[in-house]
Length: 120
Image (tube, rainbow, N blue to C red; front, side, top):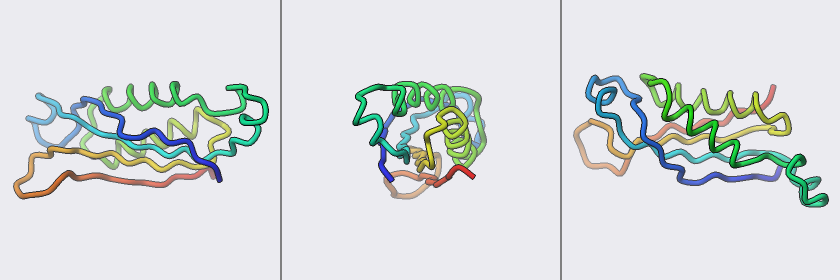
């Protein structure tokens, strides 16, 4: 299956369990892989035969910077569901939501949730 990748998108959201996360907010990074067949789009050079990644970006942007969720798992699931519901040629997607600076003690680069969802 062919892939369209949206890499290292950065957003500012208010997701988290702690009150300070919901009040102050923080940066979130999102990576998405859209599994779709791009042969028809390549042959015709027409957008209607592909997935508009600008539109996909806007969906992700609205979800990450929209209503606060407690868990990264919920944010990732919401992104996958909305993308699959919006783009009928999308067969599956990988979604990774990274929180670079979670309020936990220790030495680490980031925490993240990564899911794979496919059309049923």
